[in-house]
Length: 171
Image (cartoon, rainbow, N blue to C red):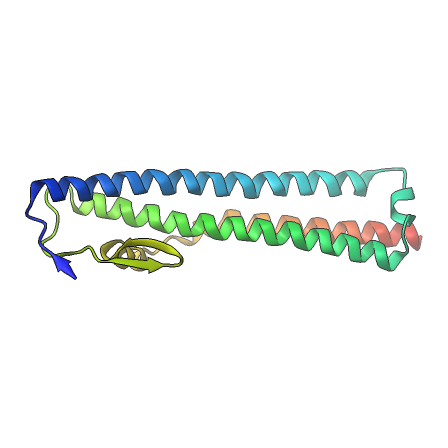
């Protein structure tokens, strides 16, 4: 439903909504990014310590198969959690970018007949005009570089740890 935005109080309310929502999702974006990178750092620190450790009793505590399964399960959990955090970060990044575009477009005046009907987009309630703008946002591929590098670091660490276990068990 499109509604006229001529009322100054309504216009102020919409602008306040844009500002508040932008701040909320910018904070959410930062939180998701920090969570992903902290878990990655802890994971890489842990497996790095296991890879370079001279004492190798930890690798022979269980059978070779069980050790590999444990390493695989914990690595898959870390990778899944980091992927989930980075996906949420990307979603919030799109929302922030859309809100920034709307703020710039509306510097002087709101558009006439703004679609303010509440819709659900990827589990989040928002006005139709925001959903429409999110779908128009095209982020550069450079925003995916931290995600790709983070995932590759986890996978590389996992492979190195499996190789280290193999070399300990079967020298």
